[in-house]
Image (cartoon, helix red, strand yellow):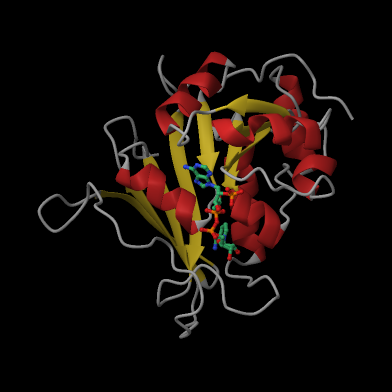
Length: 244
Ligand SMILES: NC(=O)c1ccc[n+]([C@@H]2O[C@H](COP(=O)([O-])OP(=O)(O)OC[C@H]3O[C@@H](n4cnc5c(N)ncnc54)[C@H](OP(=O)(O)O)[C@@H]3O)[C@@H](O)[C@H]2O)c1
């Protein structure tokens, strides 16, 4: 299937230069975002998945790292027919564009990222792997040279140029840590599931790093909401983040 040529139409909460960036993640009580087994760990509940669907529907693009594409094989589409119709009524495609980052370019053409839905798909690739990845994904995605190493500012500027005003970043840990440490996140939705993983072989929300928020510079809590048996913590990470 070819990639549609029309740019995603912005929902216009971004500013020139870069989109508004919303990070979304679910963790266990002890801060793990997965376990160490082969199966995908369910941290959210059905009600929260509906909320995430609505957040997706309000964005122009959804970004995940290539690790998440390989490990979770996510569809990254708006599931609700009602929300898809509402987007179309606003002149938008039914689902946001899909975006991934890769240095190696070693992606599977059969991944649902590439095969499910009609959304535009973008692969931001480190320069040395662009040629190989373009050949590999021929017709399945637009492969964009994102520098060597990949430059997040360049990725965000390119997305803005394609009409992406609001970007949802859905993980995994490597990608979340990069956006956070680079100060490129406006808002964080952190869902805490009511159980422990207790296995240090499992991935955590973020690895070590120099984060702009620490004991001397605390992030602002914009909202706390119980959703069934999970809790949503919404943190404002920039002045661009409102309270609603
Ligand atoms: N609980 C949740 O909310 C949630 C959500 C999503 C994922 N997860 C979990 O997160 C885990 C995966 O996390 P992860 O940290 O291993 O993977 P990840 O962050 O999804 O992806 C990391 C990969 O993305 C590419 N990448 C990331 N930053 C890059 C950069 N700056 N330049 C070039 N390439 C870059 C590289 O791909 P290449 O190797 O191709 O070069 C890298 O290996 C899985 O266990 C998944 O289940 C949990």
